[in-house]
Length: 471
Image 1 (cartoon, rainbow, N blue to C red):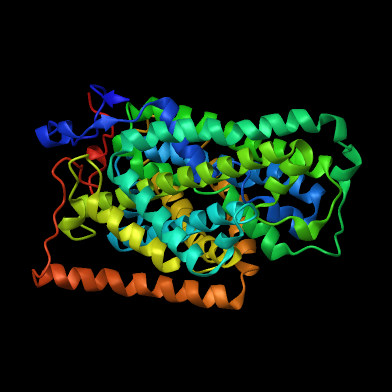
Image 2: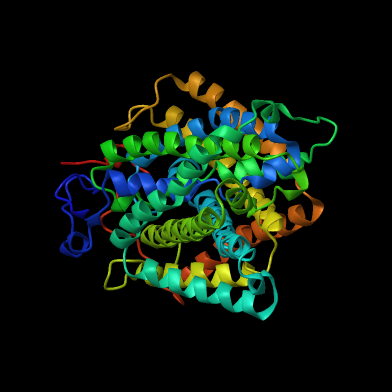
């Protein structure tokens, strides 16, 4: 960590402003790996519902096959587009460049909203892991107070700076994964491979199964909204995505292998928080408490990583004049002050929902955003084939279209299995975005709010100006 003298994202012929240099404390590879890890995963906490929904066999297969269908393409697209446009609006500027500002705003609205919904999960998971040891946190006033208190503390951590968040993520990541290493070693004598093959195709909750898999393996693109804060993004971002992909897959598969093989199967017990019960069976009270503490730390890591992406996305959209200029305000620590406050407010408003409802609603909105992302990726390959791409996925346009087909089919399947309630709520939220953008344009036209494009950003209408890394 530290101030980088490396490549900066500026328009051709321009120099970085002194103000930009002052807060450019860039994120290096190791913290970025763990920020991605927490954007996507944070460890196996929350994967238990896949066993409840479909049994051990399909859970294990899912966490091996699903990354190939979804995570790898999404990570590759993020590496290419993130190095092409290393600025804090991330996937918003991808869509704006390909499809125009209106659809770029819709992308930003849906992705920000899904990110806030996703962040509302982590206080819920945090308390679900602690309630077995502290029953008072299961419901009622103590749970509400704990949720709000946790949100306040973690929001303050985000306010203090991305440098702190990055290194905290490294510490929390190591601490959160270590108890599973010990649990695996202690469980070796009790492992029964026959338990891994248990499956009942007539008793599968496909909605819960697919939503849980999807939630646990998406959000690779979220790191793109921090690309403007990354040290030498053309090298750092692809490398960090590769290491994080390996860490995420192993962090899910190995604990599931141990958990399903070490204890007799009772699918009804497999719900969020069940890994702490397995730790009690395998290692005793000390391991249970360690794993519960690790779960708490993991959810803290996921919260601060997600809020960083959400808040910097709003700042990036303000730099592109998609949001009022006051969203561009940074704190004295270089963090997006207004973006953090908006994101924290959304988390508090949504914290009353259940785990399953939050996952389903977040996935629905996220799917819409990913469809726009895939379209933008292919369109830019066609419209701007010669634009500089510091990292480029091998293969022509036809190959990129083929790569996007399996995850698009998966998106359609996830949407098809959504409940009517989730579908209605998500479509209403989407409709708000369709109306919100023209309303903001009206306010800009009337000069009731100030909008401005940062002078440090290139003109998206001119392909020659898409120079993400000018020495």
